[in-house]
Length: 332
Image (cartoon, rainbow, N blue to C red; front, side):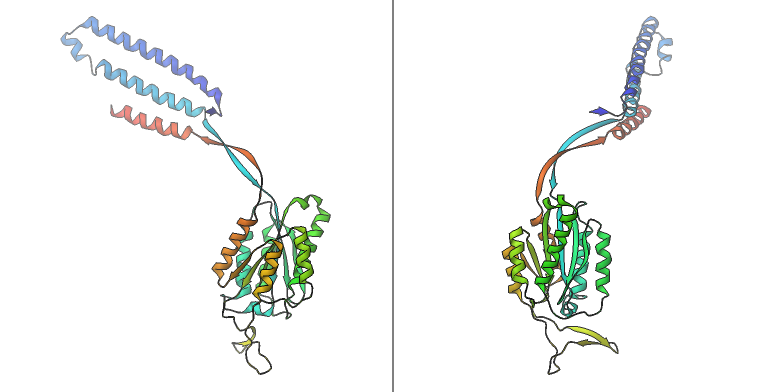
């Protein structure tokens, strides 16, 4: 127990003086009653017994004692051993090819992916940083590493309203762009080399590029895990490319039949396994959210421990006790 205002404990001297005064006052009353004896005058002159009066004195002194201690602001101090997490640099690789507009995951694969990403970056640890790379046939760095979630939220909102872009899915190019983001940050801030590096790849398509194998080897060599989230229902979905007169227009083939989006699960599994990450299949928005939760639980590392002292104010307890004792004083 410690006190924030220990100087107020000097009120204890006043309390001691009141105790001494009470003792002398009660002794004087006892002697006076002994002199009067058991006469009729003594009986009518005692509105209460000596024990009753002594009890009232004790209760009054208890109220004063509680108030004096409350003024000293007592506190209890406890220590906890808290883990310190290693700072993370996370590169989000988001497929924005036309097939990501499919609506088998409401409201669409792309919109739901941006919503899940937005939910998680708003809960991030203060020291963690995120970068955002989008890709189709080509890749584009939308945001370099930043600890400000609002920066990424702006781009995620922009992607939801973006028109249909280029066809194709070049995952290898996206991995290369993500690696360049990390390299740029290490040039600016050499200390960031100590940070935990993680890639999270969200896609619904097969890779059509020629860089994938080389990038997998490079990331594995650098010890950067790639967690892959495959988005889309097992049945697949038609690919919307626009609207005409309020009716959705879907991508069609040479025979004018709608094209059902394909999914190359093997490529994403290979990327995850060879880089030390993990592959997740998200056929619903809920599964996508669970994937992100699991990714951050598995990629988070403890780098040490520190002791944290917490203090808890106790003066409120004493004020409540003083009020309760005061009510008892009124009732007796």
